[in-house]
Length: 81
Image 1 (cartoon, rainbow, N blue to C red):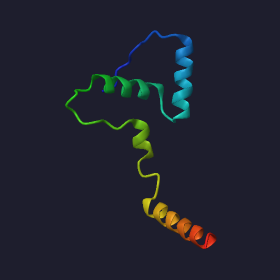
Image 2 (cartoon, rainbow, N blue to C red):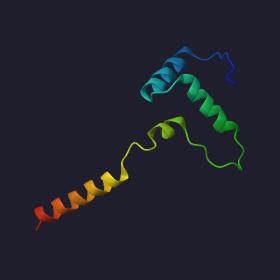
Image 3 (cartoon, rainbow, N blue to C red):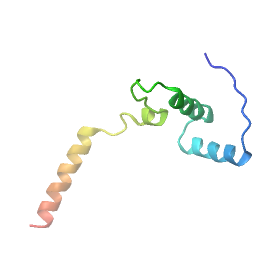
C-alpha cells in the first residue's frame, strides 16, 4: 500500500534529484523508496535489485552479442594475416 510522505529538502538537492530520476527514466518517489529499502534491509537478506537494473534486465541479446564478438574476431584475424 502506497502512503504519501512529506519531506523538507534543500531546493537545489530536489532539482538535481529530479534531473537524475528523469535521466534514469524513473520517478523521484521510486528512487527514494529504493534508497530507504536499501538502508533498512536486514544484513542477512540477499541483495535487492535496483529498479534501474530491473529495467535493463534482458536488454542485451547474449546470443547475438556472442555472434558479434566471434564475427569481429574473424574480421581481425583476416585483417592481420
